[in-house]
Amino acid sequence: VGLAMSQLPEGLDKARLAFEKARQLDPYCTETVMELVNVLVQHDLLADCVQVLQAALQLAEKGFLHSRLGDIYAKLHRYPNALSEYHKALALNQNLECAKTGLERLEKLMKGVDPDDEGEVVEEDREDMDGFGTPSYNG
Image (cartoon, rainbow, N blue to C red; front, side, top):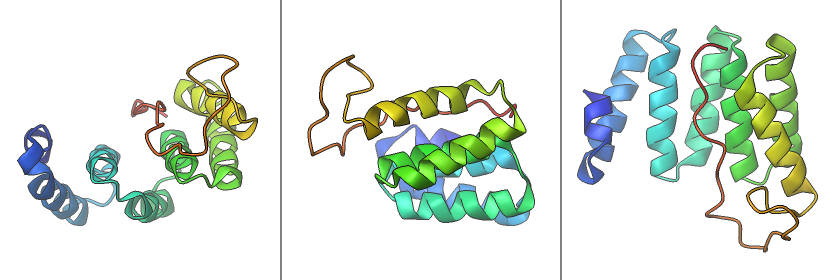
């Protein structure tokens, strides 16, 4: 239900509620956690994303959860936290592509380089920059 609602602009609030209820019913379901995080990102509720992912990591130490948390920290410009999460993800699964990509992008951001345009310096206003994507659930 939440996934269907999240596809409609007016359905984001209902999708959030559906995913939060599903998470309460089965807090170990990482797919629900990831979809809830996607909805929260669409609402620009990044601090809530951090809380949801940290709670999920208390229940299941999964590389893709650490990687997604790294993505969120990067969007919040909390680069040391993002770096730590990507390294945790790679320690759990050294082949996790979403963590490798996130780490590469983060290193460019930390150098002031736009990760999407080789050599272009990043402007101070980076709010629209994401590009990390949604990792797969097999971490």
